[in-house]
Image 1 (tube, protein in one colour):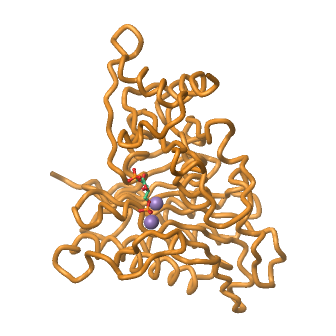
Image 2 (cartoon, protein in one colour):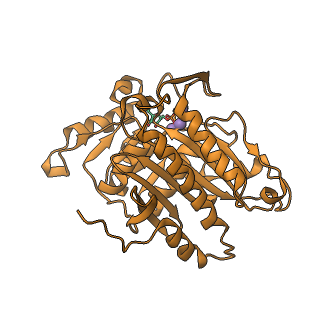
Length: 336
Ligand code: AHG
Ligand code: MN
Ligand code: MN
Ligand code: MN
């Protein structure tokens, strides 16, 4: 097979795309390049994970009570490291840090962005060689540039995101990011170590045939969610079916599929987790932004994800996202 060398690299693309941004200074393209660099470093470790001592638990629990894996720690250090050393980021927040991190040095205080990320999504899939990912979300600070960033920069509603994206470490490694102008996907060409534009202007198909939910929690879901799932199982050719169920357990992989092929992804509230499981700031908001820019929808079940005003860093919400018409059918069930 011949690899097409006539494609744009991530750097070439972001510099061109973001040059036309209002008040563009090149900071956002630099930021995305930094994220791409960290992604390549994580990719190298993920690819040789079975060969080096990077599988398994790190021996700690994070602020949310989850067992931390060695790769969670490694990925967190890589993303935090590039953003701390780069020139575009005043501070970060991460799933694996108890609190947000204000870099507070001269170059960082003069940066206009803050970044939140889930360094390694799908931790439970690390040790068994199933797709995992990274999720990130970029905001323009609302505190004064020139001074250290503040908590309020991180607690902005999702509709204020400037950019959001994810990396999927799958059968190939891809970086997908969205600005208000569109969603674009880049595949890592390992022979040259560059992310190359492979999926320009991704649109989420308005209809799909795949639903994605943890069936093991079925009896913990609300009646409306249960009825919707039963409706999915009963679909026939006559009403857009039959549907297929797919649940990988890495939201990056499940949502990447839903974005490209059409589908719906759900992580509803359960009786044991009435607030939902997924984290608003670095899991749900970035995907809500990406899915909406691509033409889909993302809600908590009763409101747009991106309208939720966060009150704390590791806040959780019920999460439903995907193809527009599937989401609208789901909404008709949730109003039961
Ligand atoms: P993380 O590995 O970053 O903690 O996220 C795990 C999340 C998400 O990726 C996935 O969709 C979900 O947890 C799976 O949860 P269940 O195993 O409860 O279905
Ligand atoms: Mn986790
Ligand atoms: Mn996650
Ligand atoms: Mn994670």
